[in-house]
Image (cartoon, rainbow, N blue to C red; front, side, top):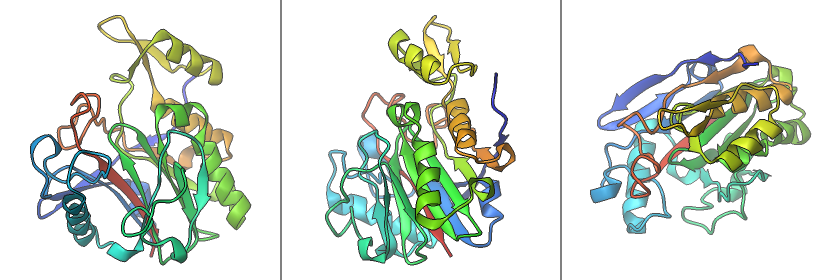
Length: 273
């Protein structure tokens, strides 16, 4: 079985800053969202040039300058940002204006891979370098959710947790939620060992997610995995859109796998407007 979902993206440049967007989210007047490309910043060498990760061996001031450049291009109030503190898990936290600056000018949040809010004073931010970004929006309750979905988080259904938190915190109806997935490693490139492949096959039994690459190694379709867990959470298939952009194949993006760990980091953002 294969899951049904839409695919599509737009790419715009503001000066040298590149921003990927989901068409279905761009049509919504109540939100702004995007995903950063890697150009237009001050970083050099392996991190050239818009590195937005504080976990790389780079001066924090450089990363903050990159954020200021990106925020100016994306029209994000710098002081509104709140960053996840990912551990490749499924913890989702609710944040409000009192959390603005966490992970930037204030100490980071406790470990979490997902954030939800209904506060228009904040911008949700998550970090990526091959892992999926999960976007969720419910226009009825004016609530949003954003998550970093590494393979472990995806395996353990962080998408389901993200939707569930919007339901429990804000009374969202999953059938009204639109969900999206940003640039990430594609089904052709996500090579795994047999043990990991078997974990996915067991967790998502009946779903056609395992393949084989030219080297005879197992590959897993994380985009199918994403769509499956959103649908399990009650999101309608027609409300799911996946960009279909591979971080490993698109040279406008950083990729941890392609660059063997010597690479910068990107950010996804989502906010109410």
